[in-house]
Length: 366
Picture 1 (cartoon, rainbow, N blue to C red):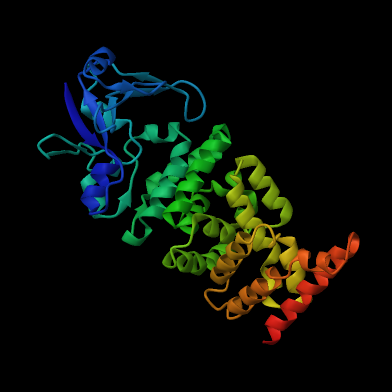
Picture 2 (cartoon, one colour; picture 1 turned 180 degrees about the vertical axis):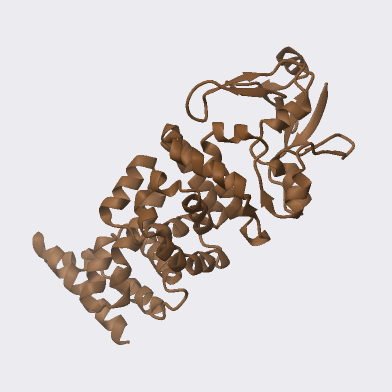
């Protein structure tokens, strides 16, 4: 029984990057042996265990054989005679197929170190094309390591296009696809991720609305994503910038199909619906905006919108302070004041609107 560090941990150590997760492969062991040693089994389709102390994942060495459609259509063999090299052979990219033993020695049968040095993302074997999820994973790695100069090998890009043309992308569950989008958003290079999908001819299947005008959209988006990343803005802001050129119907289709979480939907809708308002406004327009975003009960909505719009304008949003001041003044106007004056019924709402409008005017003129 031998244990090896594998995958992203080895890759990122060699790149000098911070390692976030440590994953191990165990050769020559059985499920029963792992349980006897105190490991907790968590994998359903194949044996993955959590270390009793560190909780790091340990998986039995395995091979995979394609049986059905999609990224789950595989039969796994995890008998104790599976070798480390066989396990590494099933991995997607050579840079992810490097192992490290307990003494720190590297096992690299597929020349992943060479590809790391040359900044190339290359598939390990033709079996790459059996898993459609790998199209998105490679696009995400291309984006994550964009600043290091990584490119996708021509032959790997050809396989990605082959997968896209086969229709296998349709077998991926919306939740699994969104997970890859989400990871790319968190990494901060969503523009590079989408562009890699476009180059792989997969974007038309995954998001036809973006694919239609992607070259122009890409040129517009990249400096704004760069700005958002430099400002350490949230992934929801990156998503809002990505989606803001799409129509209402295109938004709805994407959100519904991929079951996008509410915080991303709301961020995208705020910027798409209101960015033009922030470019040209007066007191009446600002009051309409404050009502539309429910400033009175959800003041955080305005903050989200202004942060996104600042990135939209590449930091040229000179009136942000003025709008915040107008919002602050309007928030001080209370219905209780008018009730104490004897105003009641529908007249309270009218008086409240007039009072807020006057407060906004005062802020704009001040």
